[in-house]
Length: 296
Image (cartoon, rainbow, N blue to C red):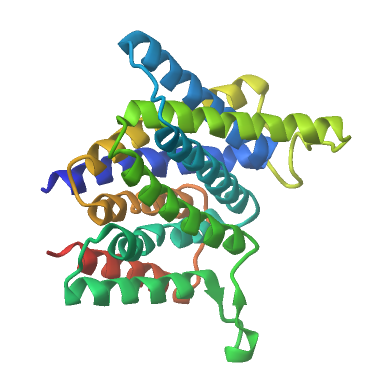
């Protein structure tokens, strides 16, 4: 198996498991708290790694700017995704976000000079069609076509931002190590999330402890879930960046985009979620397209 596919699939496993945890956690304490908490844990882990390894942070403006930009994009991507998981069906939202791999292929060609074979181009088209089918519901005819749930809008925003994250990370790794990149980026992530909570609290906005209809967890379980999510995020990021250092961006990103497939399987098998036939067809299209893209 090509190294890029191996590292991408490793990231997919970590992130797919993470998605299930954060989806449930978001339904307990809200997506903003889960996002900020997870990214705080991730930032602390990377900070400890920097101190233990004696790594020095970059000092040139371009490198710092790229890492900060990556952090800002990441903050929006994770918050959009977790909000989608909170308000929409996990299986549908995850299926939509899985398309970030296909979009990254296109961006890699346009901005990184990478190339696709005709078969890979066809695969990208099929995957895009699958995304549309996954996110839409047909209730009796074409006139009743609508989004399958409120989480789809957030999923679309997230998949675009995750694709931009992949490209930005690849560019940043040209002048920095993954530890330098993520120690700054995750610090920015955590700062944005915590600042948002503080500002909303000061402004008198009541952060609902448990969204309507959400499960009830004891505080210790919430903290444990957020901590585990942070650890999984670190593992996924390291695998992803390691792949980008030695393999094409499109290959690693495509493999990593299978993470939501893990989430979908768990949501359907263990959480009792159900997909419409057209959405199963959409997922099949995404899978078929991604397989075609991965063929040299």
